[in-house]
Image 1: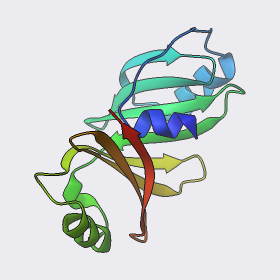
Image 2: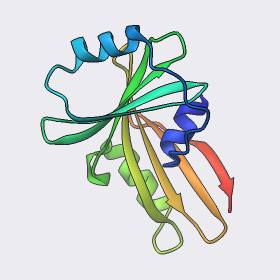
Image 3: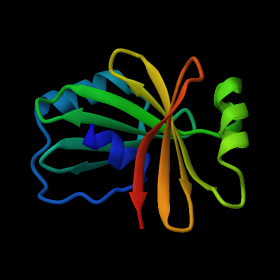
Length: 143
């Protein structure tokens, strides 16, 4: 859960690096054979590998046991499910809510969710959107 919060809010602070396990590097090599420009970051909760795949920037996250948590990539806001777009553009209007990030997260069991973060005067709001277009507040962080 903390990995998703860090992911969804764009936080990339990694402290207390640890060695990347062979399990992680072997899984990554087998799963993402055509990855280019690979960089690794690690902390005491998860490993993150960033890379280019088919012209897109992708991040993969692994837990401390070396199992894939999921992958994420930035997508265009217009790529969200239509029903979610209608709700979001009605309820979280510009200029009060300014779009910061729009991320597609695919879990290790291939379930997709989307995370959209907005900047407001005194907070950052992160919405979670299911593939079916259900919108919920994932995180609300005061500035």
